[in-house]
Amino acid sequence: MNLPKWAWITTKLLFILILPTFLYVWMSQTIFTSHLKTVVTNDPEAGLTRSISALKLALDEEYQILLSQAGHTTDKDWIQKNMTNPKMTQAQYHQMGSDISGYLQRPLFILADKNGVVLFDTIDLIKLETSPSSTPAITSANSTVSHAVTPSPNTASQAALYSVKNWPGFSEAFEKNTEMGLTSYGNQYYLSICTHIISKNKIIGAMALGMKLNADVMERIKFITQNDVAFYANSQIQISTFPDNASYDVNKTAFVPRHSAIMINHQKFLWDDVPINDLDQAVAGHFFIFQPIQESITLNGSALKSMTQLGIIFVLAMLVLGLCYALGLSSPLRRLIKQTKLIEEGQWKAPLPINRSDDWGKLARSIHDIVLSLKDKERITLILGKVVSPLTTQKILAENNYFAIKGEQRECTLIQTQIKDFNTLTQNMKPEVLVEVLNDYLSLINRIVFKHEGMVDKFIGDTAIAVWGAPFSHNDKEIRAVRAALEMQSVVKELNTSRSKKGLVSFNLGIGIHTGSVVSGNLGSDQYYDYSVIGEPLRTVGKLCAIAASNQILVSEETYQKIKKVVRASSVNPIVTQEGQKPLKTYEIEKLL
Image (cartoon, rainbow, N blue to C red):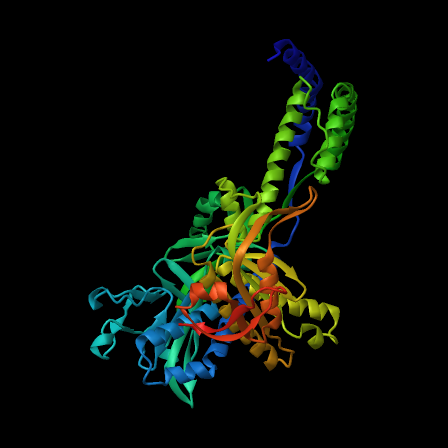
């Protein structure tokens, strides 16, 4: 370190900043402190009233969403048919419950038959290895007594199944009533509803549906009420939207009178609570709402005039001294700012003064290293974004767990899907409607490919291409692709059913699957590049997709040989991929065995 240089810089800073500042503070302190006045600038009472109304509406909306989901589910004919089918096995009931749970996407889902026997649940109530003496328990949020689940008086094979007929909410459901309220299981709280399943005016079962009272729900309530909120139950704050370092102040709320002021993280709030009932309609907890009290400190006229005059003198003096000092620093700084602006605009190769030997040179070299790191991570992030979710991408980057991005030969299984007759069916659609419809179908395809750990290679109009085997290897890539294709057809049928009920046009997929050797890697220029695959298999899978009819899945001989033991398939007419070559055997996939 160059000590004389730093000593001179320190001396100038002391003269320019510290001495004038000390004089200004000393001269103005008495005037300032003697004329301070605190004024409330908002209306916390009105704000709190609005927030309480918004919270009640938000909770009602959440319950109505659950009721709507439950209603759409219990009205389905196949569910009612299965619930009244005496030949259904426990395994079949469990599979049905799993399918419904996957469709509903709710963390709390319990399905019971007309006798109250649990057929399926998402909170581990059914544990066949657990004896009745150690059965799990679910409680209303304010209850001090756990309602232990009792064994069902069914056959010996069902001795480990448990009845919920007398549980909070279920007992009312079996009397054709629907209950809404707070439920707790273990240490988790749920906003839940419990309703019956009716067929031919007879109760054939019941179901409970709920969402976790977690950070996401609390943040949604905060957004609606425009204020911080906390949930209080069992004599303590369970969750709040305040940062962790405010937990001590938030917990004190329970010991402060309602509708009074409280200090949290150096901010004054007016607070109140909104009680929430459980499924027995008894108070189970409270939402605390915190309305900030905005305060302003003002000065009276005489003090403000004196402070203004003193401030003008101080500012002018600081400007003169600061201008003199800045002239010695601005030249290299302006150059550095100009170059970093070019980098910000995407010109990664913009020159930086990295050869300077002074502190500016050190700063330029640090920025240069950051640019190289950002450029590398941008390339890796672009590739990972096609293969994994954003959270997984962040984890891989944090661990520096990069894969090879150079060109390499890989055996991959390719899927090409196309919305059949799309141009014909959409020729009279408005552009914005056409794009929305196309995005709906392609989003389903994208989500299913990610689910089965494949890579979406590209979207071309009404066509999508996905890859298994690059950049990550899969020993079972063929069966993953077939499972994804079957799920695509199933999900598209559900979407078509929904659209048909609304009087909208429905679309169907034709899917081709082929396995072959491709070249994978970064393709493009220095300004734009993309991780993709190239090779003859792309042409082959394109032909399979082109000849596939609506709702048909065609696979090549190469793919079929790897999956023939686990699928039901039928041979179809061979196709000619290239003139002069042997026709390619093809098969239609019907279902998994």
